[in-house]
Length: 395
Image 1 (tube, rainbow, N blue to C red):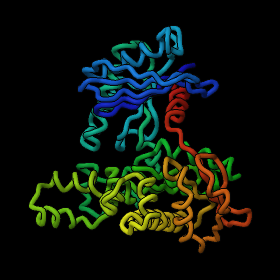
Image 2 (cartoon, one colour):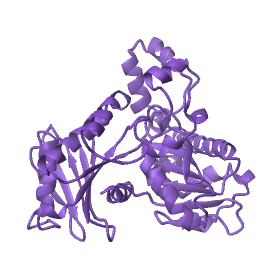
Image 3 (cartoon, helix red, strand yellow):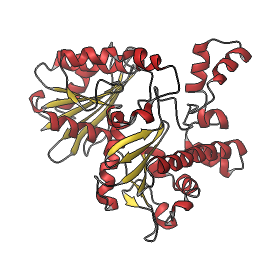
Image 4 (tube, rainbow, N blue to C red):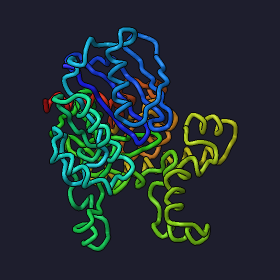
């Protein structure tokens, strides 16, 4: 069975075609500048990337271009669209409505629409991709895989805010968490690698990239996570502030004499390690600058690592212990010095890093010593494969 995985943004569309039996990626690509001019980057397995510049007025055009590329005589990987058996869609926010992936029907679409206020930049784009696939490929089953679903097992004590209760009852203001597809995939990969029992284990997953989050996974279920109502809460990230005193919002509006919208833009797009360093949101740039003696770049990296360590410590307390800590996503998989800095705060847990293994990049491996009381691992995430697996399970 071939599963087409779709991840729609407001002006972009990422995709992979995966053979679900072998889990081989047949093709991968990205549609950019939808509604502007349009560019498709398409890479068939084992071949060079093909760039197609063609107008994409909307996501319907983008989906058509993707499908045309997949069946192209020159750079296609299947003979006809009949070889696409199902489509899995990344949907950012499922609110409290969805605790697992679902086959998409009219009722599901309506429920996703009702979550739009919780993710106004993402859910509408996700729905556009779903509608385009339904229109162009009628009869092919579509599955929604939610970023928030994995965290729906959090207990109320973990997801409630200290706000008037009606904020939760009337307006669904609570912690939801994100990166759930990654946290779910990585935690499941961790059990055999770390020789842990999924039903009797305490694992902390650190998804560290431009967007970053930490989760506490106890006995196979998420019981807490760092992102909240939106992806702004939690860790210091590439351009996001993470946790701040909420009174800062009013203070900044006053001192900058700006609107709430402008303050929120500052917190989402001008803050994080980019805001602290004044250099970049890319840790490769920050590490290079820090090596040259740039103190703000070094401070940004240290603030990031310190915040991650604090969350790991708090989740070890929330689970009354920890068996394994996993690093994943672009930074978590590839930056040994940042992993080492984070782990330097955790020796009280009996954690010992293998310095040589910690220098390796992008491989699934244990990077703690044999004597370490807490196992530490690097596990590359694969959200597209996770979506394909969820889709296969439903169809």
